[in-house]
Image (cartoon, rainbow, N blue to C red; front, side):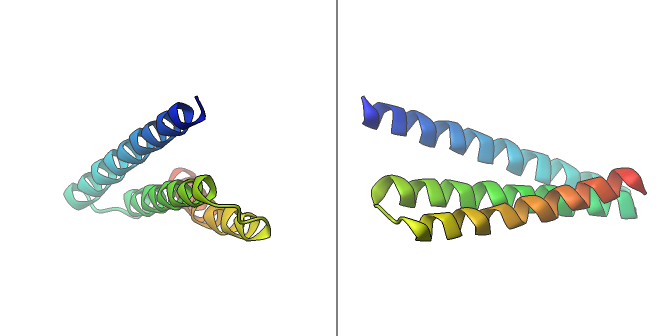
Length: 96
């Protein structure tokens, strides 16, 4: 049962990553059609959020395959940084 749940988790995370890449692509296309500072910040924000999702997927895979202890906590801290940058950039795109 655990392996089935792990498989579902991997599939759901891959779907999330695909959606984030789609948003990044759409925001990039919008920026190339009408370059503006707001769209540039939005594109960069979505790119960093996609990066955070990718790192989260890798961390999940590593965590499922081994017992890392405190190293896992460091990886989880590191995976949060792209999210922070991404959401700050999206905030700037909406604020300006």
